[in-house]
Image (tube, rainbow over all chains, first blue to last red; front, top):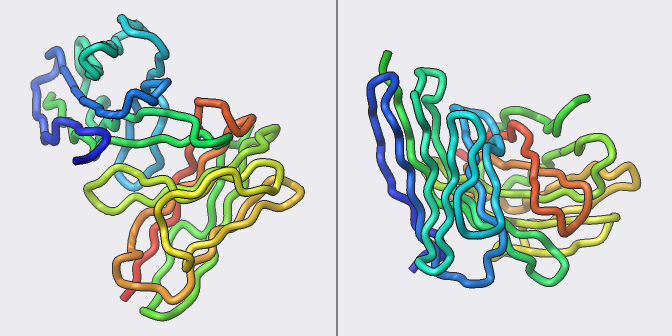
Length: 113
Length: 113
């Protein structure tokens, strides 16, 4: 069983829709919870990160963490064609003195004009 | 300021060969991490270096090695290449070893034929 499971997609939505992306995890040692956006043939770009359970909002993006259920979500409001990308959830822990990220396998999102 | 830079952007090798990938971190960042991203999967942790010392290693064979230089740049070396080593190799930098915010470069796309 993988430590991080991500809804695989692909997901296709019309412009303006609300998008929900989800991950579950099994390792209680994870401390930080992040969402990265990755365009084709590019490196991941950090979108959101949070430490505690609850919601964190940044513009059209809301990250939600439920530590008791080991579940995280990313909501995108008023989705735009420029949001079309692969979204990766990532969980962070300290392994010794090293910061190690464990990623989900990614959800490919297409926003249709 | 320049972000994380990686070279080369693309590389084609044959089985059994050796490869060296290079990474320059964001100015002021002292920690470099390497990740492997196979097509359709999330990145997987290979190494983290901080102040020229290895701080963490993922579940990769000894054919993979790395080092960090006094200017904090880093090299990833892979010996005896296998077809399964074909992937996008990502470098990420952070200010310290324990900092949770990783900033990724665009990666080196390695194809092993």
